Image 1 (cartoon, helix red, strand yellow):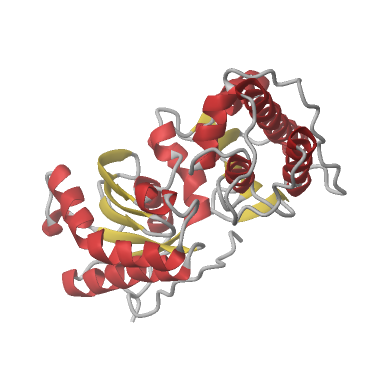
Image 2 (cartoon, rainbow, N blue to C red; image 1 turned 90 degrees about the horizontal axis):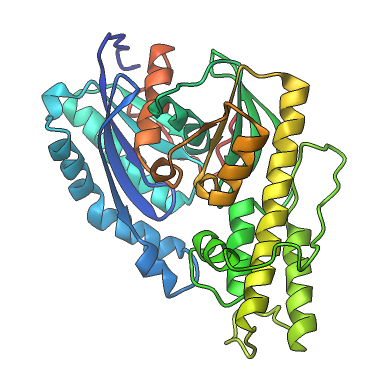
Length: 352
């Protein structure tokens, strides 16, 4: 049986996110106000491995998901009587991590007799813009840039979506992580590369821009390889096998110059494609979200190139439950509520 659909003037949604290595819960009012947002990070756990270990992530979610939910309710000064619906990430992501969140949400929805809304994690990155002072209008063009995804998506008022450009290989965030590891920088790679790049010459190494059949698509694997070859040329060793200890060390200024040149190439590509998409589709609003959207250089250059673009606040760019609640509210208004027994985690869930 499908759960009842509540269309309310004021609504509180408890949202749960566990798609990767962050266990998060939030309480969102009216789809616009963040009453609480709690995140239990696993960065310190996975840093020792240089990246996320799926089995470790899933076990960590089990340990903290209920305490995180309880803390979110406390910080929102609310209880289950005030919660009108539960939202949860159903995909995409690591299947073990997703199952912890979805099974928790399904159980709570059944026990507490609450409607349940299954949310697409990637779409939620874009709809986190509803938590800003300037909510977007439709049609909305979203540049979603994260560790697992890089895409330009056009959203309509009914929440239908058309992907107009997407990565053909590595996502931008994945490229940051891999280049950071290549350069001997810590995980997560994005902030580490940006910090070093601040002291570098971004024209020192003219790394290539991919040329694709669809000019709105992205490709970062060639850029990653170009950085590897540059390091190989400088050091005289092959740094391709990153499973063994580094046998080389770059001079600080060389390291900064490579990082800056790499970051510039990524940002230039993201800005260029976004501008092309705007010219082609003439959206009513442009939104920039996802973990890489917290990058300072990207925000500065896109804000100059695209006046009026809506940037998701940095605190809501990385994985969080507030964005899940923001999208769930929009879905609930359009009747997209499901039964706890029908919701399924989907590690490869498509945006469309």
